[in-house]
Length: 388
Ligand code: NZQ
Ligand code: ZN
Image (cartoon, rainbow, N blue to C red; front, side):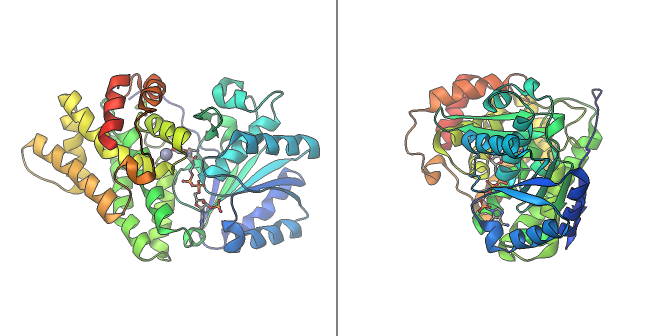
């Protein structure tokens, strides 16, 4: 296990009615920039509740609405301009990962003397940020408790993740009831995303990280148990609560610190989103089983990892490691595509040509160096083609 520094400065208020803690924002100043998406928070009433609490606390609220799924740099720039012009004290995101990521980039951009895109390309330029708060409305990315923000410039087909300690939220409110209104499709995509975060951290060759590995298996079992329940019963509190809390821990360092994983399915998916603006979790679901099969073929030594996954997550048994590994991947496939009803190939999400695969693979390959099984540009083209 490598040395590490584990630090989560985010205060979490978890459960029903915890939104009342928004009144604590007045400890951080008087002017809030409220960042939100396409309107779900107005339809389900969270907007009105939040506004009342903040008004009662004497806060002045300015708004940045309309954050896109796969948030755009143009929206970030708008937010940064507002912060600078109105001397905003803090940024509050109410929504999903896209909204929170946009709010983080705005908060960092407000403390930077230059174009916010610089901060997306070069995290070392993030030297500070306004305090960031979030009310999470969909269980998926873990942005509510991590240091990452993923921003797109669709004019250049670029989507990159940036990160900084300064972008870890100060406080996040996680009320599982707020996720009751998430659609079947987004519930499934969110479950695939949190599972992918867990896989990216779990599949590593670093020995001796038993704590991280066993935590990861517990998270995966929880996601596999409750994803289908949330689809069938959208207002099942325990299902929504467990998914929400599992998603936060999949990416906050708990299961990755100490084993230095390098993610590689995410870079491949980010290229799909950058070129085709698809839903992140759906892209991950399509790529994951194909990636698993590919790396098992390319590097047979990882059969151990997949057999361990099969035994500890899926309860498979027997002496034949190769068989357990194969069966575990088959179980993953069935879970994502049949149980959760996620799209199973790239054509199903509207990608009808292979013309960009080479360009996308070249970009994704730069990120895959040093991963569990490093992938070359050729390998990635092959994975895209198999997923097509
Ligand atoms: O925009 P609104 O109207 O709010 O609707 C959203 C959006 O259409 C809707 N939604 C959210 N909460 C809802 C709801 N609809 C009804 N009821 C609710 N309670 O769901 C749709 C998707 O929202 P979005 O925020 O895009 O989803 P998600 O949380 O999956 O975020 C995806 C983005 O996060 C990035 C992805 O790349 C993508 O850009 N990621 C961020 C990460 C991070 N910060 O750590 C890591 C991830 O790997 C990921 O890359
Ligand atoms: Zn993700």
